Length: 289
Image (cartoon, rainbow, N blue to C red; front, side):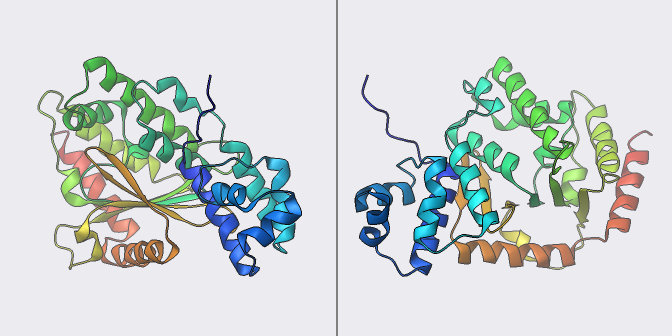
């Protein structure tokens, strides 16, 4: 069987980009950096471009060539090298989880914190099972009922990152008020349960929820929703943009900074956390009438 060319996953791209950045900071060409490792330049180029593998044991020696010996950086990149080929729990669902979605789940599982602006739906990490099924069925128009059920299971399983014993994921989400007014004719209780879920999640120390009011002043969120993932140590942030056919990733540092600045302005335009909880509480009460 012929060797398979590595698929440039987000993990591998993050690793390659970090290695390229440290090499450039050291002022080394590909040839000069590869030679002490006993490699040729094309091998290092493939690693930096996420189409070649680097063994975890090779990370520290390569970084030493670059003059980077910071233990925190070395450990972070070694972990990325270990995880680049690791199969995640979501691989069990590879019949329904597209590669771009698998990339996103791996980002979410690696991240230290997530910041998201959600103008259309409740973020997946906050969704109840019923809400997940309804919204997946509405968007995944070509999926069978069985595939919708499997995708809803994946969405629920992702939420384990909020309560994992070590480094529970920190999530700060700004949700547009219009999303909270959505109703489901087939199951009227869906939104009431979802509002209650948001109130419960807001009590967790690692979760922050804000609502963008209908009467908000203009803000950068008018350009659409996005998710900004932040990682431990010096690893660069990654932005995810979703649409009906999958997800795209923004990894250029200057472009990511644009979204970071945008999120700060979105937060400033949204309701305070106390006002957010008051509004959600009122809406949950009215939904019982």
